[in-house]
Amino acid sequence: MEKIALDLKFEISKKPIKNRHVDNLLDTIVTRTYKNTKLTSYKAESEEWVYKAKIGDADFELNEFLKVGTKEYVVEKSLAKGINNDTLKVRNLEQTSVFNLIFESGILKSIEYDGYLD
Image 1 (cartoon, rainbow, N blue to C red):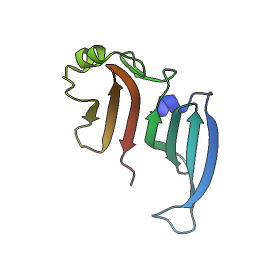
Image 2: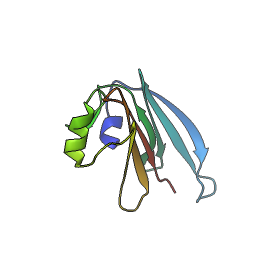
Image 3: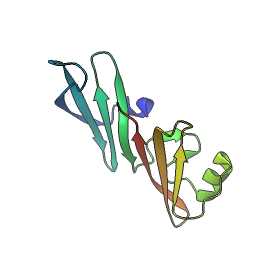
Image 4: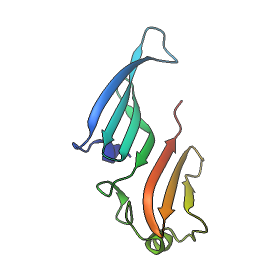
């Protein structure tokens, strides 16, 4: 997600927010939008983490097999996982981040990401 966030196509808006752990410290919520895609990240002094995303454009790919417009059977083969309905959930081992791959008529329509943020 962080690689996608670097794309220059995005329109960026920023909103200051109080740091939950350090008094008198302001961090930033950064929202990036482009057509049907929106990424939201939390920016601290030295780091930034994307914690929510909805990708609805083929302009952005997670890898060479995962991007909007990919056929369902290609995703099944690349992930070695069958798809039984229109949404496939893919989680990391700690279950702190989830990708929802949403299909319509056998085509990947959108990718939603929910990441853990402390």
